[in-house]
Image (cartoon, rainbow, N blue to C red; front, side, top):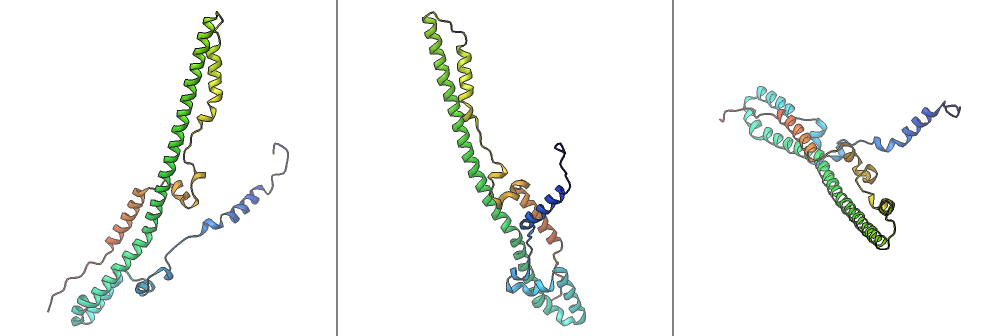
Length: 222
């Protein structure tokens, strides 16, 4: 607008570019049948849960009293155990990869931080050494001029200016920024995730699952 050029179509151009470049980041993962171990496929297909098992058990008990004992002792128990195993597998699948990735990210972050720390300390040492060197030279020149009866005005300012100029390369410091982060860890970096976040999420989901857990109905042994 400052140059008087037409701005029509700029937003549309960048919107189209965004749609094109954002496609790789729109991939999402979810559990599908091909991820499910074969011994859990039936449970997955039927979308069984602990409430389903309870309803099934109650229905069978009401229709056939004798079968109730067999159901709770045999069929119900085996289904319950299989469902428990399925839930554990599902739970591990959801969070194991997150913990592994977080472990790898923390390892990378620690090593990068240590590397940056070593570099920064080296820079500080070089700057301190330069300051000591130039101040010694300034003192030597000042004493020399005084001995020869020369004016010492401006010596300190000259070496201070020299220090400011020569110290610039040593004032660079390193810290972790997004451009340093490997692409597989960028989301963790952006979200500032840590093990406590993952643990809280895992416990919350596990507690939710526990609240839905079917409590085994009591029965009277014959």
